Image 1 (tube, rainbow, N blue to C red):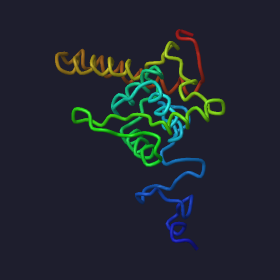
Image 2: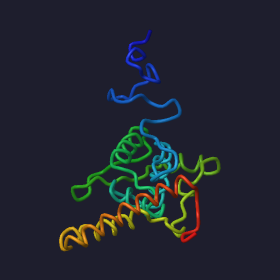
Image 3: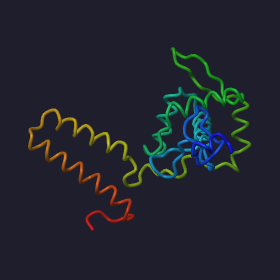
Image 4: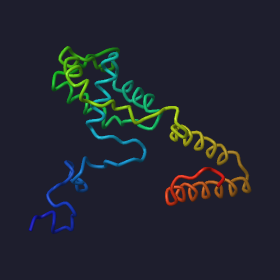
Length: 188
């Protein structure tokens, strides 16, 4: 019997590279379907290449540009962007140079050829995101809600704090019901 299987792992022998939880058979560690906008490493790679074809960018600019193009639904973390940049640099598709203390990522000629060769067969990594869709910027709305809650917590009296707690509990319940019951029109 495989040693990982003895510990009750569902996917014996397939462990995260840092020794963490097992890797699901269908993808990378932590990969989610739907949800907040997590994407596979291939999608991050395609997004980075597409953005760099337009202009050189710093890693942070790439994260922001992905977020803007996806209407806030997909914001890759530094842990997704920087390893992708390193991989592309190792492959000779980008070059990284120092620019005012930051690293500027620029597409190489080989990178442009790579993109051009795959233009017809590859899909747009931003195609599934419509920034104008209703509710597209849930992250922005959540940040606004967080600001309002902080303000109530700082300046509200006991009755306001109690009312705010009830509002938040009801909002949480309503969101879970939305998922459980499927899409509905508000107020029905």
